[in-house]
Length: 168
Image (tube, rainbow, N blue to C red; front, side, top):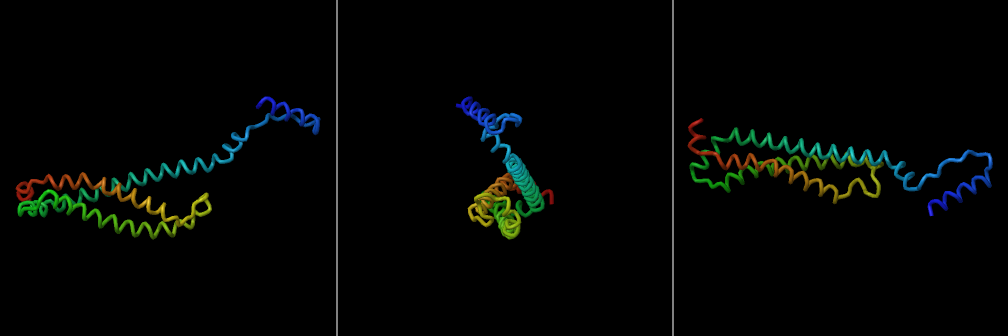
């Protein structure tokens, strides 16, 4: 059918415009893919930078929580010496992470709502204030934050109370 279409194109071209140069016919799928190549590149770059930002925020939370555990080693040692369980120490560290994530989520959501209106022109079939997208972003960031905080929390649980008190 492709050959028949090309033959019909060439016949019509010779019949209606005999002196015009013959151009190769271009398939619609090729034209369509060429027309959206810029948008496709922008979406791939946006996805790459989103993953990079998520990775950097996870590294930042990890570093912040490691510093928190290091600074509070003596306190954690005292709590464990007085009978705090591993579960309570883990919860102590994760509670601090939850506070940070809540504060960051509130500030980030405010900024995202403001910034969403500036990108409205680039969105297709999605509104800038789509709550499902905001919820998805919050869930992904919260998961990344909690995953980044698990290692420092596990380190806090493994602190030897005698060693922590001896170092002080």
